[in-house]
Amino acid sequence: MSSKDCIFCKIIKGEIKTDPIFENENIFAFRDIRPLAPVHILIIPKKHIASMNELGEKDKLVLGDMLFCAGEIAKNLGIAEKGYKLLIRTGLNGGQEVPHIHLHLIGGARLSEGIHPV
Image (cartoon, rainbow, N blue to C red; front, side):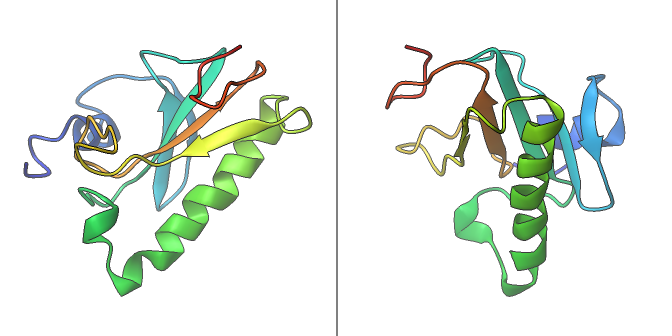
């Protein structure tokens, strides 16, 4: 899939409207439309990277930014102290549904091993 057909790239460009939670020069964060918990945020790089398997050496900083911002977002949403889960799915067997790398920030409830609230 090219970046012009990617739903997350369309969100970043403003072609598909969403309520941004956070944005900087490298990343964009918004609420998942199918939340698995009371808080379910997707944190995506603005650069189209289809999966973890396509990361390049120069993408390390973007991934670091995604992880750092996940912690900041968790604090801002009041879930940091009780805890949250971070998840990146890769490929078909990993459950990746959108071919654009994305970090799930999931919390706001006690989570089971499989992610869903207990």
